[in-house]
Image (cartoon, rainbow, N blue to C red; front, side, top):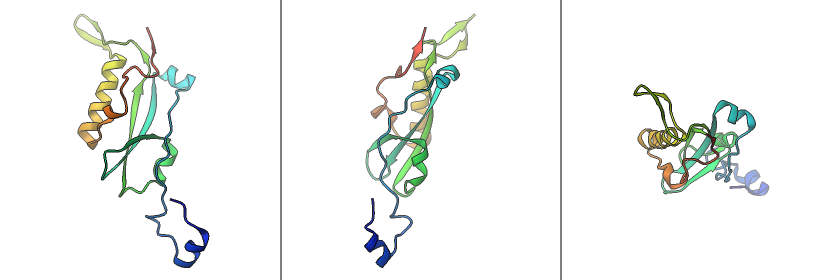
Length: 128
């Protein structure tokens, strides 16, 4: 929410009210992210609504924490599609299972259902 300068001058601006609504932002992995195998993605959920949006990490601090809950996930983008096993022991977690785990972790720990906005567990995946 932006305030008119005249109103702000006359009445002042409350710190909690002056924060802006989240602006949609689609995270795009860099070559370094692919090398690391993961990209950080940030989401905000309005606490009194079922509204979830991906945002830029740097804008998270400008959100009113009474209105929005923010979570950051490590989204796996490279490696094998499915879990790899050697002698019955998982040697490398697959992209699908790792990303599903992240979504379930956020649901359990923060009560935010990212399945509503993350429909493709292989989004950005470059694998083999």
